[in-house]
Amino acid sequence: MSTLEPSIDYYMSASEKAGLLKSKISAMDAWPLFVTQKNADRAVLLYSGGDSAQARHHILGLKPSQWFTAQCGHVEIGGIEAKKFKTQDPVSAAFEWIEAKKKRSEDLPFFFPGGAIGYFSYDVCSYIEKLPGFAKQHCVPEISLLCFDELWVYDVQTQELYFLWQSDSGLSLVQASDKFKRVLQLAPQLKKQFPMQAAPRKIEIHPLPLMTKTEFLKAVEHIKRYIANGDVFQVNLSQRYEITQNVSPLHVFQSLMDINPSPFFSYFQTPEMTLVCGSPERLVQRRGAHIQTRPIAGTRPRSADSVEDLRLSAELLLSEKERAEHVMLVDLERNDLGKVCQPGSVSVTEMMKVEQYSHVQHIVSNITGTLRPNISPEMIFRAMFPGGTITGTPKVRAMEIIAELEPISRGSYTGSLGWIGYNHNMDLNIIIRSLEWAQGRINVQVGAGIVADSDPQMEYGETIEKAKAMLSAVEWSG
Image 1 (cartoon, helix red, strand yellow):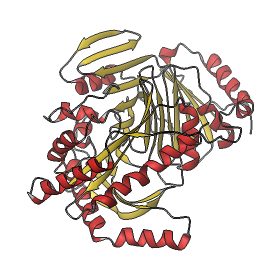
Image 2: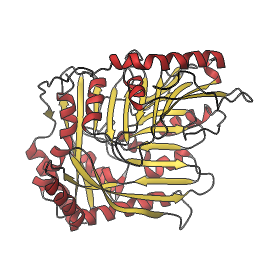
Image 3: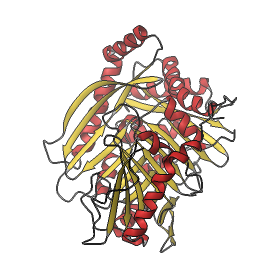
Image 4: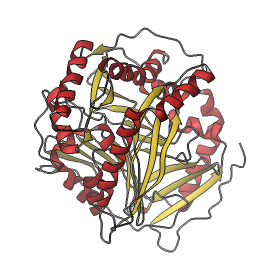
C-alpha cells in the first residue's frame, strides 16, 4: 500500500457540518476492510464488482445512528429519537423520515453525500397499487433503512479511500484523522484475517423448492392462458429454494463475488435478516435532473467453450421471442420514466447490449430522461417500483397474477436496495441473484419471464441456471 498519511483536501471547516478525508490505497488492501466487519449488528456494503462501466464506488456503513423498519403497517425508528407508530402507508413514512433527517449537502468527489441506505421489499408494491394478498406473508421487514454519521467510500477507478463524517458523530478533525490512519495501518493485517483466506471447502447443501417442477410448469401454462385471453403480455414467475444449513453470510458474499462479480453487489445486515445480493440490474439512478434505468430481459446460459458461448450470445440476440420481450419491457420502463420526466426527454441511449456473467448472459438496455421540476425521491420511487422486468406488463395485472400463482410473498427478492441521499440523488438496484438469511433459513429465489410462446420446460431450466451461482456460493463457503 502507499502512504499512511491521509490528505485532507475536502475537510469542510467553514460549515463544520461534515468532513472528508482521503488516501490512496490499493483495491487488494481495501477489500478486507469491507468484509471483516463481523461485530456490527447493523451494517451495509454496496460493492461495485465486475468489469461493467457501472462499477465505480464501494460504500460501507457500520453502526448507524438511526434506522427505520416497517412491517405490516408497524414502523419502528431506532437509535437516536427512537419511536414506534402505525401507518397505512409506510412508503411515505420512510421518505418523510429521510427528508426530516436532511443535512447540508456538500460538493463531494462521489455522488452519495450521506442519507439512507437499505432496501424496500417487493411486498411494498401493495402500498403503491391495490393488490390481492399473497397466499402466505414472508417474514422479513417490508422496509429496512439505515442512516450513518460515518461512511467509508472507495473509488475503484482512482483507488482512493474516503472517510466521510457528519457533525452529529461528534468527531473532531483530529479524532477523524486518527481513526482514518488506524484503518489504513490495519489494512495489511486485515488481509490475514480475510474470511476465506484458506482454500474454500465444499459443503453439501439440500435446497428445498417451495414449488415442485410440476407446479411451476402448471403455473407457466396458467399464465399463457391469461396471455391468450388478453389479460397480460408477459409475467415474471419466480420460485424459491430454502436452505437450512448454518453458513456464514460473509463467506457466501465473498464466494459469490468470486463466482459472479456484478456492478450492484450488496451486503445488508440487521438483527431481523441478512441479505447478500449480486444484482446486475439497476432500477433507477438520479443525478440532479438526470434519471436512468437499465432493464435486463432475455437470458441464455454461459458455456466454458468459447465457440459455444458465442453461439449462445448470437442466439440470444437473434431470438424473436427474446427481442420482442425485451422491446416490450423497454417500452414499459420508458412509460414509467415518463411519469416523472419532462415530455420528450425520455430516450433509449443503449439498446439490446449483451452483458455476460458467470452462469448466464442477458440483453440489457439503458434509458434516460430529464426530470420535471420539483420531483421528489418518493415520486420517482412510486413511478419506477417495482421494476417491470421482474413483474411483467401491464405491470399491475402482472403483479395480481404473481400474487395468485406464487405460494408465498417475495420478501426482499425483486425489491430494491441502494441509497437515497440527503441531496435527493439516489441509486437503487433490483434485488435479484440474492440470498436472504431469516428465521434460520437461507432463501434463494429465481424467476423467468413468461410470454405467449414460452416453452414451460425451457422457462423452468432458465430459473435453474439463474440459481446455480447462488447455490454454488453456498456450497463453496465452508
